[in-house]
Image (tube, rainbow, N blue to C red; front, side, top):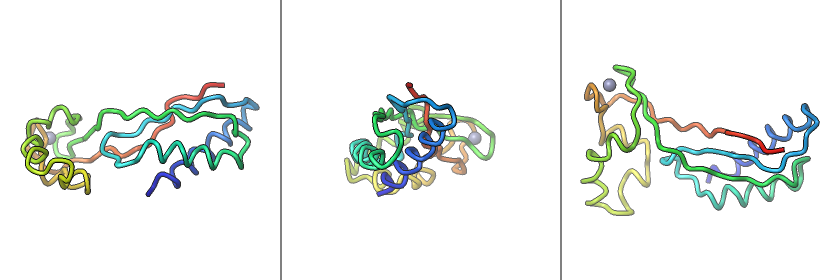
Length: 135
Ligand SMILES: [Zn+2]
């Protein structure tokens, strides 16, 4: 659902960069966090449609799903999905694909806690990053 908005902003920022540097863009490397709920295929399709109206119409989009990061607001600890896997396993086992985290990823703070201090108050990294551009 957010794929088109994201593709739009990626195309416009890369296009701006390309015009400033006066360079053609062959490839754009994007990374998304694993809990982002974005469909990679939809994202690429949206990018390919939007780029046709831009100055980077030859650019290809490559999307990497990166390890989900969390940052504890209480102790500052940064941890990944792997660190709380054992806390989530029972939920994933009970619900399968229909698990509540698949539907509402922000619920993760209700089910998991910081492995260091036990706080449920942590940030879920949801940033979409352009990791690189090939010219
Ligand atoms: Zn903590």
